[in-house]
Image (cartoon, rainbow, N blue to C red; front, side, top):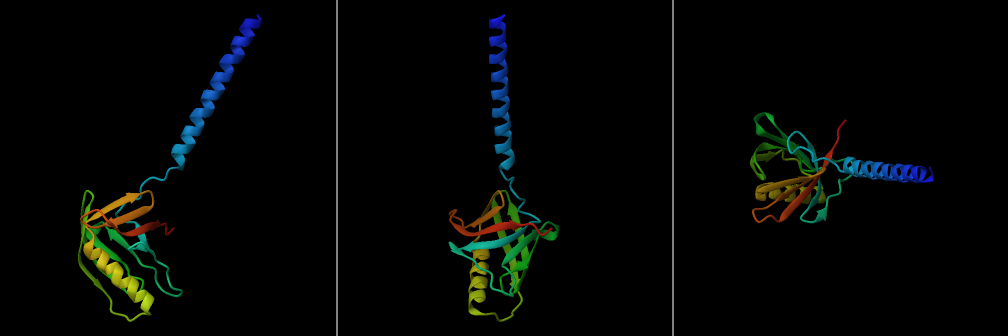
Length: 152
């Protein structure tokens, strides 16, 4: 009888341990963030040439959205409005007919705008990891990092 009781306790302990292990594995999987979509996501500029972008008070943050309809690019450079088109195939991307409004802004915002526009011109590849978008040149060197922003 004691053997049966000891055996039952061992089996119960093993089952409880296995259940806890499975639960912690499931929790780890649920904590990983799924990759955001390249298309129809608000991408806020976070770094440009390894320099952190700080949005100036009372100004628009540098960002873009790649709209699915008509492969349209829209956003802001941190100073002016941004528009154009894009072509994305697999991990390759090309920005075309990029234009901005022509408002004058303080020097920090103008520097961000110039760097942002140069990045779009040089970009050849993209990669999304969770809520981070990385735009890279033809050699795979990162040019800029963006973060997905939830608007609502």
